[in-house]
Length: 426
Image (cartoon, rainbow, N blue to C red):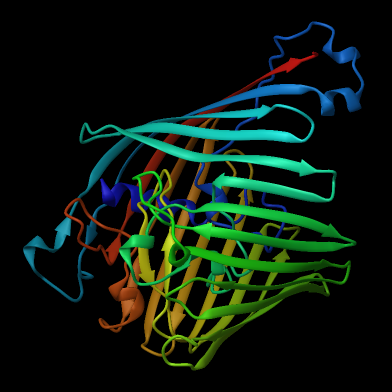
C-alpha cells in the first residue's frame, strides 16, 4: 500500500491552509490528520453547566474525547517513465486501492496547570492488513505562568518556507537509520514581552522499540521569537552528534498587502571538515480577486551539501530519510477557489532546481459537492534531467514500490469527526 499512502500524502499537499485565511500558511503537515467537520458537543457532567462563569469553565478539570473516521477509494494509473520517454509494456500500471481508518484522541485537563494529550488509531487497507498507530502522547505543565513545559511524543516545526523547510532544524538527521523514528521532545517556552524563548531536547531513537538513550542520540536547541506588528523574527540553533551545528534566522513582514519572508542558515561542521556552509531563501505570498486566487513564489539557494531530513510517519505517508536538495531552486504555487456549490478549487505546484534541470509539476482539483464527501483529481509529473533531484525522488509509487513519474490520480473520500467533553466540579 505504499503507493496509496504516498498519493494521499501528495493530494493533501495542495491544501494551502485548513481555514484558508492566512496566505503564508501553506502548511502541509497540519492537514494529514484529515478534514475536520463541525464538532458536536455533549456535556454529561452537569445539566446546569451554562450557569457557570467563563473562568470556572477554564479552570475546571475536564476530559475531551475525539473520534474521527475516514473512508477513501481511488485509482492511480501511471508510468514509471513518462510515456513519451519509454515504450516498455511493463512501464504502465493501474494501481486501484481503498483505505479505511479511525483515530481516537483524549485530552485530559487534570488541573489548571497539568494536561495530558494522547492519540491512537488504526487503518485497514485493501490488501487486508491491519495496522495500529500511536499518535501524539505528551503532557503540558504550567509553572507559575512563567515557564510552559511540554514533553512526550509529538512533532514540532521551526521555520517559514512551505517549499524548502531548511530552517526546520528539528527534522535534520544524520544519514543513519538509527535516527529514522518519531521524535520525543522535552521543551520549555518562556514568554518575554512580545516574544519569548524556547529551549528543547529531542531524540529520534527507537524508544518504542526499546532503544536506549545516550548523549549521541539527543539533540539540543533553542530559539528566540520577536513578534512585532511590523515583522516577526525567529533566531535559533540546534546541534546533535553526527551533524554540523546549525543556526538560522527567519523574518516575515507585510509590504503593500503582500507577505514577504526571508530565511538564512549557517552550518559549521567542527567534527569533520570544519567548514562553514549555508542556505538562503526569499519568498512572497499574495491574494488576488478578494482572496479567490492565492500565489506563493520562492527562490532558494543551498550550498550545505550532504544533508538529510526525516519525514515522520503519518496516516498518509511512511517515515523516511531523504537527501536535502542542493543548488539554486525556485517554486511557484497557485490556488484558485471558484466558489459556489461544491467549492471547486484548483491547485498548481511547480518546483524547479536550476542546478540539474529537474522539475516537479502537479496540477490538481478538489471538489466538495456533499457534506463529508470530497473528490480529488491530480496529475503529478517529474520532468527534466533523469539524473535530477525530482526525477530520482518521486513522491508517487506503484504497488511494487517503483516510482511513478507521470500519473493521473483520482480519489473520493468520506470523513467526519465527533467530540465529547465531560467536566468535573470537585
